Image (cartoon, rainbow, N blue to C red; front, side):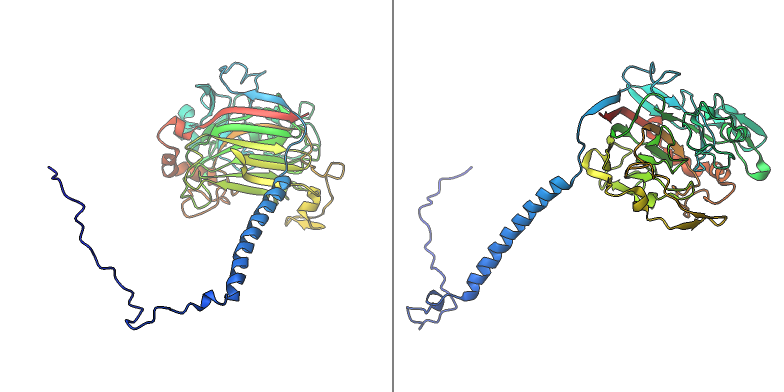
Length: 448
């Protein structure tokens, strides 16, 4: 219990005197700074406030010039595709569906280890979202068939529709400057066999593509020439290769990459500790070049890194803005761009290509394949959208290191990948949702 205390009876304390003054010091202490001002004090005053003013003025100027330096879309944008998947699978897949399922096992030019199917195991609608999910081929034909003595003919192979000439470089007599839809092109039996069938042979370490996934495109239903694309998605976990990208409807300038490719987003599902940019990094890039074996993508790519997050844990919106003067690829908002390219001169000039190039088998005098196009060529033609989930590959997207269970240059890369599945399968996560590429919505606008 508190007791009443008389707080008015305070002890008087003697004020401490300065020890800097002697007891005999005169009352009038001299203060010369009051009689004569220090000229350096005035200079310091002006320097301080002058620097503050210049800093504010420079900041305002930078904001002003930065505002007008950022390229923006002009004119109107007309909707081409607005799909939120809430209506179920009706109208999504099938002959007249929004998305065409590519059925192919050629490796798509990257030496990928999956085959893409039209199976509802690999692409389906669930809870108003599009799911692309990897599964094992052995679930349907058994482990032994993957390794030896089995011929797998993929059902309803779509090579005749998608052509695949950019995916199967071994094919001969490749058509050039023809419609990518390819209904009027001649049938290529050799290329068809590479894309639609495989035989396992243990003696030469040749295996059936051990993983099944999906690759969906809007080639028949939605394409744009200048406009915007928004895709809201969550990326998968594991040694997987999700991608949101675009290809030209017609190869107006020649086969890949001469007619261009726009990679709005691609990533590696490996964790953030992965030394070659894992699930906390997404990349955007443009593929283009004057020859099928000369790609200038190194001049037009960038990436976005999450410092405190991962792209396989949350949904993000992956976007592209594309006009006659610039291309911007970004995540969630324009400030988080992976690539912002203002095209002030032609891509031929941007490439700064040599007059003569050699690929160790032949020397070629380079000529500009985009002479008849605009300064944006080859990116001045209609492009369609692709959503895909790749697995592995030998093109270097997954660089060789001591922990990777295959070598990119090895003839038995796919066989070694499958043999060592216990080393990578655990990275896929415990649930289907962990390994799924989940798309919440897709929107496309055409400049009009």
